[in-house]
Length: 130
Image 1 (cartoon, helix red, strand yellow):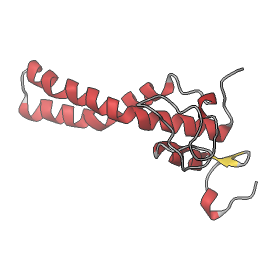
Image 2 (image 1 turned 120 degrees about the vertical axis):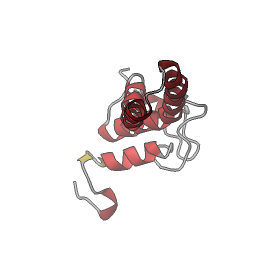
Image 3 (image 1 turned 90 degrees about the vertical axis):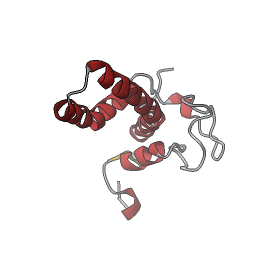
């Protein structure tokens, strides 16, 4: 498979993984990059509004929550440890600050992680079994 400057990176078949992941992170259809990937918060659109592609065929069930927690944990943990060591607040203060912050950040990251997984599945050809 020949690589053009736009499709640098690893390629599976004729679909570059980087392109699928970028489109997914932008919450766009992985096939055309134009239409919205979701019709609701985490509900994948049945058909792309631009190209008509069926994006529900790509599995994205369990990986997005794991990826979101992994990302959020790595982003927030240094601040949690720093606050705990420097300020030594009571546990209820730590919980009242960091539990809502962690939940809100995970909820905000979930659509992007789901888009990433759908884009990766599109690029690699992974589909729901029929």
